[in-house]
Length: 393
Ligand code: FAD
Ligand code: DHB
Image (cartoon, rainbow, N blue to C red):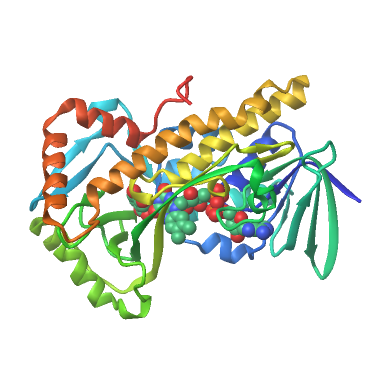
């Protein structure tokens, strides 16, 4: 029978980072991932890291390539009413954000874990968990054509929104909060220089658009789309045309087009489960909460959960004290709800919810107010760069 201290379900950013931070602190873990290594390393998702996430990666000894290759952004642009206005993050908060793709981060983490000889099992099937309400949690899974049982002290459910861990908890033990939005994001990746040096979030009567990037030669663009849209109907030409129509003219002219290397649609959702802890099971990252991507908070929030959990586990194994473990859920939820609120607000401000021109006029008035008020801009900026960790949840 195999045994580890912490069984981690899921090798997304949460599971890999938790495993790496535990390893750096002498705590053993096994990571079980249902997808293949290639699939996990290829998935294109988030692109903006808060400074707190950057520091956590350094603490995990996986920051070297990121510090070399990231693009530091001191601000971003808000596009509306035919023009752009810069939000000077650095002047407003003293902080900046880093553009570094989740794909690259995941590669760095997988490499670091593999180099350390980690028990990182890809293509682990039929994962199930039990016994976490008692002293002896167990994980069952299939791997290499055989069934296995893993005994552990704790289980970390890092298995995303569709994972098995949250679904194993009896429904009466948790409360879920959910909001779905009547649209999604259609995103493309193309090996062309970005339209602008910084990101541009654009409110337009036709719907939201976002100009982002992965590097100086790789652009990431999104347009708001309907939930029933079919990816095949979005040829590259149609995408570029729609993107340009939703951007201020000067930006539209600067967009350099090229063949897409990836194209996908993601629905938008806010979701939180409470609590995050069930006996010896902890839910972490997307397994416990989802935010619409507008504020670039999903990945950063996952990293914030990991920061609290690894600290609590290190304290437990060093001292036997359970206070931090017991406080994991409440501490994380304070930050989670603030990010849920910010992401909902930023989405509401920038997306088209209906054809009612009254709503669009209200958004334009709020954007006009926001960009003219240092106080309002300060609030946007401090949320965007990431709220502080000291006591603020
Ligand atoms: P995940 O990355 O979802 O990882 C969970 C892992 O668990 C996966 O590898 C999965 O295969 C594995 N797993 C699931 N079930 C099982 C099982 N039964 N057994 C074993 N393993 C299992 N955030 C942003 O900030 N900006 C963005 O632009 C952005 N775009 C996104 C686009 C999409 C399509 C999605 C889904 C998310 C996006 N996000 C974005 C959110 C961000 O990517 C997530 O918040 C982040 O990936 C969370 O990491 P995680 O490790 O908690 O979960
Ligand atoms: C990206 C995604 C976001 O949700 C965001 O707010 C900024 C950038 C991106 O994928 O590059």
